[in-house]
Image: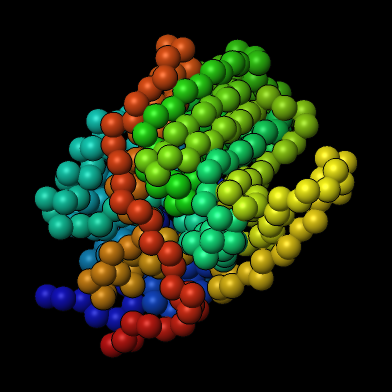
Length: 379
């Protein structure tokens, strides 16, 4: 029987990031958050009470809930594929935090399982659906900087151990600056330049042992399993190229830096870890003043309704009811993973690596898309 009305949503994982998802998903009229589940059921209950969610319990309770159509998977990266697979086996569509998995094969298997079951997989980040990146993409599509040629991105700071009370998983396999923060930047670049075809990278690790610096566990030491600084270059299907820094080793914080250079100008994209921000363009000038840092900027007016995490879940929910295709698909999530794994392989081998997967061009969000509008019949 075809379901109608707002789409039922359940969460597995109610850690730090669940707050921002819940703040938005509980305000979107086209979805209903019905139940929260966690290994720590008391934490799930506390989050349910905080955000007005009617039920809480275990992961099994979420999977067994008859009205849950989308499971939001906010577990640690090492079990993303396992939890998503369990959701699909239970007959649920799944939205998973990035990355889709920590290795290629489990990502491939997950997409095959979903396809066989006729279910959907969506993968974070959904920041690319926000007004910031969308405004930048529309400017590029209009030809505001001519033909886009190259990009530079930087994400560097001292690392999440300075603020996270349980940072170990962010330095474990499937995380580190490349897999934790890389998806925001790589997804943004793919949405602008198309699929990645080839990558090269070098990496390093400042310290083999880190120390928790925040919370009740401050002073606890833990082992680092991954490179904590990566410099990567990429080539895209359409001919564009990029260079990127991903680092948890820098005392100088510099994050959210994305510049796209075209034949007629350079465009600054807002922080891809955020949903909005200022888009601005500078154009080529003949004056020597350009070499003295006297850059003239043109501000591009931001369009779209500001919201936050949960946009990808909402987009999937609306697509489930309409029969359309959601934007942040599992295929996009897998191509991002394949790119990140290829970068990691290049760090390990010192060789350029071809990215075997591909993905179709990522559509723009309609300009009149409003997450706070009720577009699904409430019956």
